[in-house]
Image (cartoon, rainbow, N blue to C red; front, top):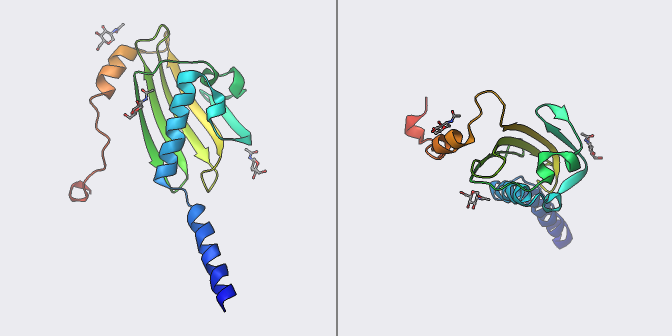
Length: 152
Ligand SMILES: *[C@@H]1O[C@H](CO)[C@@H](O)[C@H](O)[C@H]1NC(C)=O
Ligand SMILES: *[C@@H]1O[C@H](CO)[C@@H](O)[C@H](O)[C@H]1NC(C)=O
Ligand SMILES: *[C@@H]1O[C@H](CO)[C@@H](O)[C@H](O)[C@H]1NC(C)=O
């Protein structure tokens, strides 16, 4: 009897730790920001077969923008605990090479490993690119939860 209760508790515990929590996703996104700041892929918990693409083009992550350091002026992330995914906006306006980068990351169900990274990378020469202007406007945006009274 005690044995089966213990088993049940162990099962419950593993279910809880298998959940993709907002707190874990926040950590994963923060690690992504730090990885980009330092150009340090080692800060990311990648799966052995993580797919990586920039602007819809699959590429070698070690040759991508994420492997080079970029000073970030502003970042914002949103978290999807249902799909176990993150979405992060990075704005680098005051660096020598300004960028605006949007990145979606998909994780394993327990959020322990990143399985897919997709980035939209824009920089000088791209249509309407203006990192300074983007920084100015994005800083004023509020992405707080919408109060239920204002829904629908
Ligand atoms: C990566 O490997 C895992 C485990 O082996 C597998 O389930 C998954 O489908 C693979 N993903 C890709 C994109 O190949
Ligand atoms: C990213 O945004 C968070 C939250 O606003 C902030 O605390 C952190 O310093 C930012 N990171 C960088 C590299 O700017
Ligand atoms: C970029 O945006 C800033 C701030 O809105 C503006 O002052 C500047 O003229 C813009 N630059 C270009 C090249 O459009």
